[in-house]
Image 1: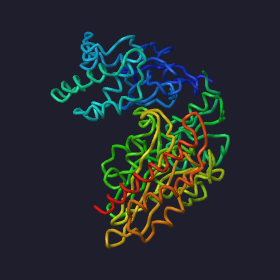
Image 2: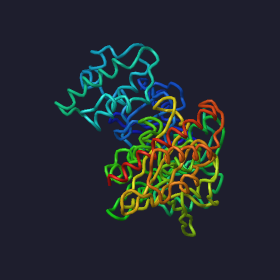
Image 3: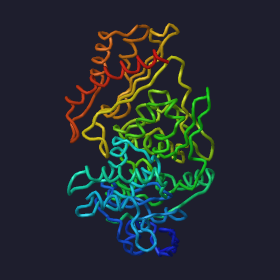
Image 4: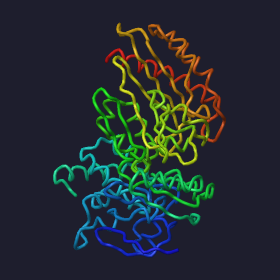
Length: 161
Length: 293
């Protein structure tokens, strides 16, 4: 039986008709139409579906949409500033060539944001540890880690939100 | 892949939750983090008729740490919260470390401490140090609650001492003794999103002289259907001052007790070797730390 629920995604309220078994990633992509979040393994292993829920990184492919009511959901689309200006962390990924095919990037960037929100002066080890739930199959992690380090400089200086 | 159809409940209070647990019984599953539950439901390994989402129940969350009084941790406290809790890091470093090694950052922000025990996987991270620290679990139902040691709660692979209508609601951790230390270590193929091939925790308490072992508990994970408490290590080391030779002997004893299996992650032979390595390392580390307290 379908149910009408409200989801707060990137500060906008979306009213969607869902089934209790619908997963958050499917609702975000197919019903809300925000296709930035990717569905990779579908088992919570790869991190491509990472979204922020109340600021914390969670896996939307093993999260029920119905259980996400009343929470603030942030997807990659929510990071871009008004006028299309990139968020500093997005800019850092671009500047450092941390994007190849781009499939892992939305999840990777949201995990990066979460780790910088918690600790704006991270060590390399801390970055690796907190990013280890996001898998990139194109290239390597060197440039990604460099991008996070660069973003951390902006973070600690400007206190980005 | 679709999940089966189920009816979804989101209680707001412990009383509502326990009423649902009593009424729906084994046809229902409790949804906390879902990092284990959703995955097995997707694989159609289980298809519950009802889900009881306890994330709206504030009473099931939180760390209550009082000086001199141990700690109480709600069943639905997220592992990331335990990993980053300054109180837990200071008082129970082995637990903070183990919680920080579960899955990935995303998993730790979703998964709960209660779920990590109730999933009853032999390779789970947090039950090992919790058992080493003599943690107790509180099981609640509409007719009351009972408390029992975690090591008696987990009976085997996916088997718990949990009656119909009961649910785990909190963990009770005793205050660490003076001159004691608990340490945790694991071995696996990679750091994130892997399942330990062996994990272990050692808790050592010393006599007033700061050298003689008053109490020691070595717990092994992933080498037995449930967290395995070594009897021989305790027997060997009680009342002793530890030397390298004695530690070596104790590590070999632990190795003899472990009953690992061959599987995709490691062979039994390799696991037995690792038991010895971790036992040796942890006994030394915990002994040194206990002396330093």
